[in-house]
Image (tube, rainbow, N blue to C red; front, side):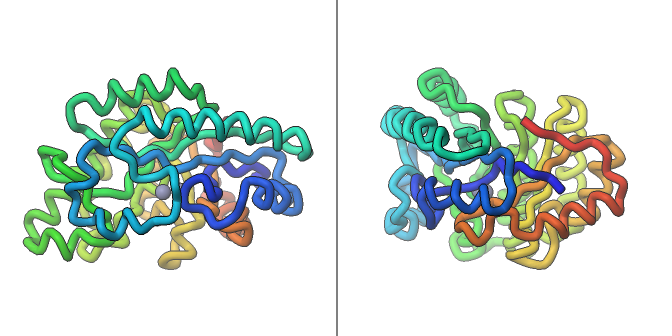
Length: 276
Ligand SMILES: [Zn+2]
Ligand SMILES: [Zn+2]
């Protein structure tokens, strides 16, 4: 079974355990490698978002920022703290970030500066927010229906979402893509919707040889891994590399359902497996 987990969160972002607690549990789970992929969600207009009143209550201190500069220093200190801590544990520890990719002018340039300043071990692209063409402000996926009641506009936001992941992948700045069909949590976005956009995204991943995760968080949320079988089958046809992730936000979620994902991949004879 896969003995590494690169998609996890601690108290630094919105995880519920300290890095120390996560490392102790990782050893108990038999992991040989773990990566902390803390959320990096920077949008200059976060405060204008209708989701802001909910987000600002969030206790995670290093997520939902309007400026890369203020969060870069925190990541540098965190990386240093983790590398000291890691010496006490018999496994390899990486520090990365799960990045919400935005498309407004200047975002990418600022992200590049952040990368140079922090020099993290790896990056995941994982979008949890939706936005319109102008990318004026991000809307929490769980609040799309509430704040964008018109169905055609909702579809436009969702269509754009899959194309945004493709755009992120095309930059080649990300080591892998998280939960490709995370948006199935939004009413109207099911396993078989937006297939043209999903196909385009998978073609981009295949062309650039960018791995995608098989996330057991999907099982916890609604029964199936992210991505759903229809997408995973297509990924196999396109020979896209995969890795299993747990997206653990709590010690109890580390390697949770790895055996389910593992046997799914084995049953499919999915051979192209990826590691850092
Ligand atoms: Zn995520
Ligand atoms: Zn995550």
